[in-house]
Each structure stands twice: as structure tokens, then as C-alpha cells.
Amino acid sequence: MGKLIKYEFRKQRTSRVAIFIALAVTLAGFWTGILFDNNEIMSLSIIIMSMGAVFVLIYVGIEGILVFNRDLRTKQSYMLWMLPKSIWEILGAKFISAFLQMLIVFGISCAAVGVSVAGAVLTIGGLADLVRMGQKMSRTFVEGGIQWTDFVYIAFGVFLAWTLVIMTGFLAVILARTVLVKSKFAGGLAVILFFAINFAIERIYDLMNKIPGIASSANFGAVDLNIWDVVFYIVVCLALFGASGLLAEKKLSV
Amino acid sequence: MDYNTGAPIYLQVINELKKKMVKGELKPGEKMPSGRDLAVEYKVNQNTAARIYREMELKGYCFTRRGIGTFVSEEENMFQDLKKEMASELLANFMHEMSGLGYRKDDIIDQIADYKEDGENDA
Amino acid sequence: MMLECRELTKWFGSKAAVADLTLDLERGKIYGLLGENGSGKTTWMKMVAGLTKPGRGEILYEGHPIDWHDKAKIAYMATEPFFYDFMRVGDVGEYYEAFFPDFDREKYGKTTRSMGLSSEMKVRNLSSGMSAKLKLAATLSRQAELYLLDEPLNGIDYKAREEIISLILEEAGEDNTFVISTHLLEEVESFIEYAVFIKDGHLADKVNLESERMKTGRSLTELYTDIL
Image 1 (cartoon, helix red, strand yellow):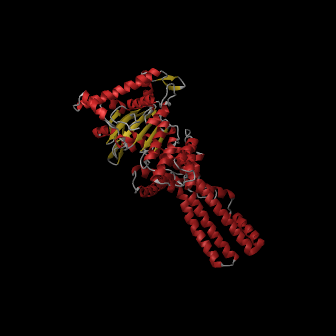
Image 2: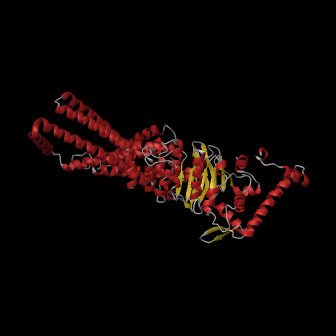
């Protein structure tokens, strides 16, 4: 498994490097603006960074699906399918390496932006301002009733939602490549199937919430997520993963 | 080696090896290539290589020492016989073809006496 | 029997690429897989290698239905280049070593060097001939039980062909089986034991070449013309 993850992670290296270079360039712009007291460059860098963050968020989120689709479109799929590895291990490695990619890209980006903002406050306003900012932020948490456990719930909720996207994507790609072998329309079909499967899951979710008592269950902290939602999404993710594996094992030709 | 693609490969390789023995390229008692090396050298598969040695052993051209390898026969007489045998085989073929063209033995002998190999004419 | 294919069928759309193909392969033999382009040779190989799933029929390996575990003993080489773009020659060896327990890294190093490939060369920059040699070096550096080589001599110059045939014959023995698909009949005629003729996705004939030469004196080219 570790070796599979290593090579899957390697496939995402180019995008990783590109994102970090873009981050470094915009941060350099940000710092140039601060050090030379140039508000235009600084605000331009912040705007580019914010817009870039949205794009990166979406791209890195679905990159695992894109890589999988590309694998199946080219002969490079043989590299995985000729190995004495079960389909579960292959799909599992793809999922884990996609998760690692998110973790590393967002971890480093958030850390870099956080340090830069703190540094900017320190440069402009001095140590006193930085301390004041820290106090203000922690007061907001306390006054707003936000607790650290909420962050755990939010992170878990985001993870679940993202897992659902990836699993739906895997199934859509496998389904499309099984139905349309060697066709250039398979990619387009995968996109359509992705939304179709999503739509179906939403309908099932709505049906579940019609069962008395489920919709009114207590949420976790401040997050709009109750125990039934969590169970539902976990079951759906496992079902999608199972369906993907079985379909790939029995029917998928690369 | 160039094969006649219409004839069994193993017989052609045996013939080639016999020629090597007669010419002295394979000496009495000398170790012969392993089955694998023979296969690579003559572009045959392992089963054909094994068959070649089996047939040659049966004819007494070589012998196998278990675990050590296959060796060219040590009997000097065998080489003489082999040479004669191959010569008479060639001769028989030749005579057969020539008589097919309508030549009689006397004509053939005259022709051989007059025959000049390439290069001899220049001398 | 090492490999048994029973009424194997694979459709692509409405066209059957392989149709009711029944074929047995024994251990310790070299098979030539012969047929026109599009006759189903590649599809059959990919099914045995586990890359393509049969629509109908079954494949037995050593008596059991073939599954992914058997890929550890089957070395498949596709016609097209299939290594990852980002790899160098050395990385290919590392990859094979990581995933195939039967891979001999030392042999791979020796073979690639003798082919003029250095471990720093980038896979995507190789010429088609070099790329073909690299695939073979990687595949033949495994000590597999069943080798499936799809057009291994294509795009390779004459001298290198001889080297590759030598590599195959060095590796071939009583414990393994080779299936080699090719159009270059003269190149393989002397060493393939059985010619397997495929026509329109099914088995047209399976001929022991040495017996055929003894019985009828037909060469492989003549057989090919007669059967297909």
C-alpha cells in the first residue's frame, strides 16, 4: 500500500509544485507591498491570492478524480493494472494520496499566509498590535460561543463531504470507462454521471429526513450536522467505494 | 545460422554440429555448450536443444555426464566414420541430382576432373 | 495445464474482438501468437494479463480461476509504451522491484546498459526503438512463469532483434512459458514450438512446427498463408 501511495503522490507533484510557486510569488508581492509601503501591490497580491485560493481549493479537491481519469485514458493505466495488487488497494492508495495532497497543500498555504499576516501586523504596527490582534481573535471565539471542538466537527464535516465527492468521482469515472471503452466521450460522460450520482444521493438524503425524528436530531456543536447525517454519509461513501471496486474488478477494461 | 525453413530444425543443427566435429572445431572429449547456450547460439527453444543432444547421444556422437554436461565422443574411429558418412551422403545427393539431369557416371567423373573452383581460373 | 481459456469472448460494442476462444497453454513451451491486425491477439493477451475483463467464458491459471494474485507470476508487455512520463530508466527498475517479487534488479541494470540505456535517461524522451528495448528489459528481468509479449520485435532494428531473441531464449526454460505475438515470422520460426493462429477472434489452428516440418515440410510462412 505504501509503495502504491508513493507513486500516486508522485503523479500529483507537478500541480503541487505549481501551487507552491504561485503562492511564493503572491506572498513575495505581498511583502514587497508592505516593505516598500506600496498599497497597490499589496492589495493586488491579496486579491490574486484570494481568487487563487478558491481555484486551488476546487482543483486540489477533485485532483484525485482527474488523475484517475487520466490514468484510465492512457496506456499508463497498465502500470497499475498489471501489478499484483487488489483493486481495493489501488483505489485506497488513490484516496489516501489525494488526501495527503490536500493536507500538504492547504497546511503549507495556511501556515504561509498566517505567518505573513502576523508578520505584516508586526511590521506595520509593532509587537503591541500583534498581541492586541491575538487577544481580539481569542475574545471573538469566547464571545461568539465558538469552541475548539467546533473546529474538529467542521474539519470532520469537510472531510466527509470531500470523501463523498471523491468516491462519487471514482464511481463516475469507472462507470463511464466501463460503458464507453476507448471513447473520447468517456470523460464527458463521467462528468454527467458525477452530477447524476450526486443528485441521487441528495434524493435519498431527503427521503431519509422524512423519517420522523431524524431531521430534528441534535446537531454537533455549531455545525449543521447530526448523527444521522454522519451515518448516512459514511454508509454512502462505503457503498460508493464498494460499487467502484466491484465494477472495476469485474467489468473495467483498461 | 540460416535454416531451410521446410526441414526439421533439430536435424539441421545436428548436421551443423557434425560438420564442426569433422572439421575439428569440436574436438574429441571436448565439453559441448549447455542446452541453454545451444538454444541461444542456434536460435532454438530448450526442447529442441534437448532433443538435439538426445539424438546425438543415441548415435554415439556425444555423451552426457549427469550434472556436468555433454561431451563430444572420445572415440577417434567415430570421427573417421562420421566424415565418411557425411561425404557419402553428399555424394549420393549429388549423383542423384546429376543423373536427374541425364548425366552418366563417366561424364560426371570427366566433369569433376575439369572442374575449376572460383579463383583457380585466375592463376 | 498452465493456462486454460474456455470459450473466451469479449465484445467492443457490437463487434466481438475475441469470440469463443478455447486455448490451452502448457508449461515449458514457447508459443507464437499469429494473426492479422485486429484478429484479437492483443485483446486475448490483455484478458490473460487481467487488464481487460472477458464478457463471457473463463480463464484458469494452474487450474483455478485467474485473479490478481496471479499477476505476480505473469509478465505482460504491451505493444505501446506504458511507463509513467515522469520516470527515468532507473525509476522503471525501482518500480518493478517495488511491486514484483520476481524482479531481478541486477539483471535489469545489466540488460539496460548493454542496450545503451543509462539509468538517468528520461522515459518520455526515448526513441521508439529505445523505448521498445526498455519495455523488454523490464519485462524479461522478471523471473515470471508466464510471459506475454505483444509484438516485442516491432520497431527494433535487426541487430537489436537478435539480442532480444537471445534474451528470450536465455530466460525460456522448462519452468516457464512464453507467448510471443508477431508479424515477423522469419524471425521466430526457428524457436517457437507451437504456432497459434488466431482469426476473427477465435482459434484457427495450433500447430507444432517441428512435427509439421517433418510431416509436410511446410515452413511457417506457408502455414500462415494456408491457415489464415
